[in-house]
Image: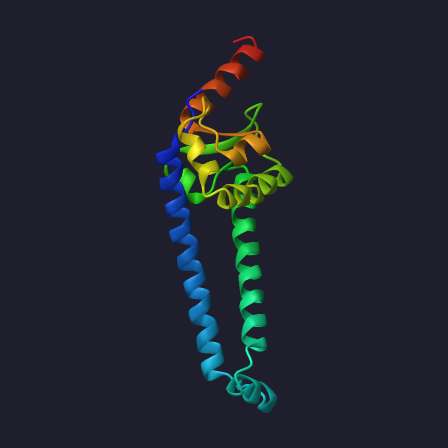
Length: 170
């Protein structure tokens, strides 16, 4: 099996980040236009809280937006990697997919576990991501935790075709 290495995975991540950034930018622009032209003026209480130096409203809006962004990013990765595609748009562009130990597509639960376990790699100063460059099967920490592999799609398709041919007696 041909496992996807560190640099190919990094480039896929960059592509996905650009796509998500563009989507969030468009949503932000639409939201800004709605607020600008809509009747969305802050109430007198909100205005006085903001001008009095209180950051409560700003903090709550920021926390809410951050949680919405994390939720959207999680759903993007988990839904795409557990779909028939087995990959995000960035991975598909580079011809790599994510599979379980039996070369099957991930369940939504496993794809979610894979996504959220990436937080451990962030906590330990990104060492978990760098592991993909040094482990035998090119697995990062989140792959080891979720028991997943990032592999070359053409190689996987070839292996699955051979297995199907042997299974049908061809």
